[in-house]
Length: 457
Ligand code: SF4
Image (cartoon, rainbow, N blue to C red):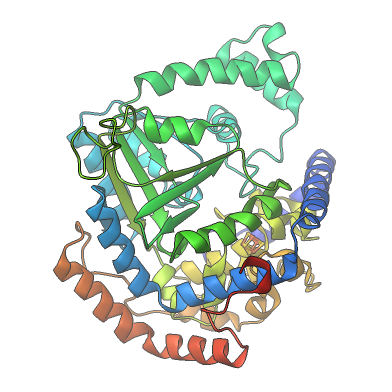
């Protein structure tokens, strides 16, 4: 059993008996679920778009090694530095080294689940770098020394009264400053604005990265992602390797679904597409008027494996299609009662119940895949139609015993031709059989990747 899953039943039992938590969860998840349904109705031929999004994800994951190499090459061509991180420890060491090399004392950070997964804040704190979370929910989580309990709504388990008390205790807020959500948001904004302006590095995750252009796409609703990635001199994007999409056109398809499925919006308020560092005057691709007026001098992209290539070769590979929208959490009758902390890991709900045990090197079966009523609501809600039920049915000892070496390379290093070749050889060797199976299944299901649906032709 994974450490994350140990104690699951006790935590779930405690959560079920917490009426405050239950009311908060039902209200918030109900609101997001209803919003998702309403806004999907505004998307012409939504089912066809979802089918096509699934084809994109299936194709990308089946040829992941190709797109990783293509992305790295394109990103470096545009001036970014790409780093491989086979493990969480490698990823944190790389980011700490980047911070140290710039003498960084303060890092601002936008919301990122993969940095939670690798415990980046702890590693930076140990290296003497103060980290400030700038997403409002994550800022509150950090002030409270808490943990996120939802993929996109980290404080779904907290009420506004909780937050008011926290701001009084930690920020010395006056009564006026905590008199309602707008006042508390304004206080957080004033506090964070100072941090943005004095930060040495900005750290983000990525909702997607685009192999065709080497771009990093970050979507937020608060504008903090934009400030994090453009105000400090150095931007570090920490990215799970499965977040790649082949082209900008594919990105457009997935963006049509991400915000709709996550928050019931047609599009998030801010969609930032970052391609390399700021262009200097005279650069080949600089604007005709001269260099770019803002943006970081350096962009580093850390591609994190941390068990994903093991999942790629496992019966649970389909979970890598996930675009982290959180829709499956909002409709899951188990998550809606026990909340995210009961799962014990970083990723809760149906997606976490498959992803966490498959990623961890577990010695025995995990109880998490059994945190399901087998109702199929997660599959119905999932924009890329991941079959959670099918994944839940995988024999647990098999998930636990998937072993061997599945890392992309034997030691992390900057991308070089030889490394790309090593990546390709290793992945091709280990995953050839899985890719053959995936390709055969896609062909059987009529998933011709090049076929555009009528809705998006
Ligand atoms: S499994 Fe599907 S519904 Fe759940 S977070 Fe991932 S993409 Fe969204």
